[in-house]
Length: 140
Image (tube, rainbow, N blue to C red):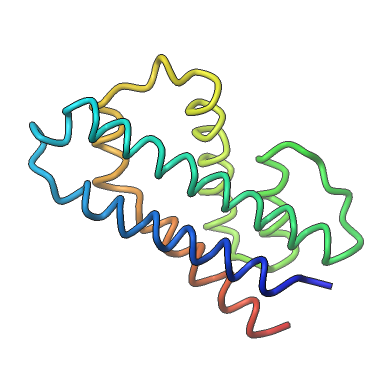
């Protein structure tokens, strides 16, 4: 059985991180590129992605009949296969899983410019995840 309280708590965390990312997104580019602002962005983004995949792992583990691999890309695909999120978002999450791995393991290669680009263009995908998982919780 899905622990809705746990999932809602993680969703709230992601929503809070998105608020902080939106604030950082509004900064002029020169100010954003300050190492402290870029580091804050990296932290909020990484935490958001960790929570996304924690939620995904929980939902798949509790949905039954799914051989849950520990790889983040498998979680992203499984969410789409189970109809928890749509296939477009599932494929986007596959890419986000790769980026999560980059943030965690290749952090020294992540530039302030790269983070600026992501925060300018990709926050909608995280917000879409929040909406689709909230809708899923209402259906079950």
